[in-house]
Length: 119
Image (cartoon, rainbow, N blue to C red; front, side, top):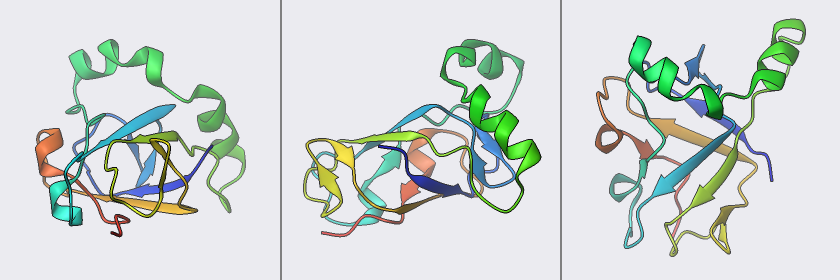
């Protein structure tokens, strides 16, 4: 399933104007009971090394569509989720219509959270 995802982790290589350019992400937090106990395991700090090592996880088709359609989100990634107590987790896949990842000043995945988490 593809999910509309907004992200404020500005230092992530996948962040493109608060949209996620990754093809797939994984939300970690197996024992989470609050959103602060989750994180975007796919976070990679911006830079040449991060961009190069994550080329295979880029949603190129979504990025091209996004260039021509500013009114909708064409870069929605597939979201797997290890937060088993989240109401949106259906067999380790996120079922939420809209997902928000926060972590404005994050420099690693531990600085991010899935704000959409609901127990």
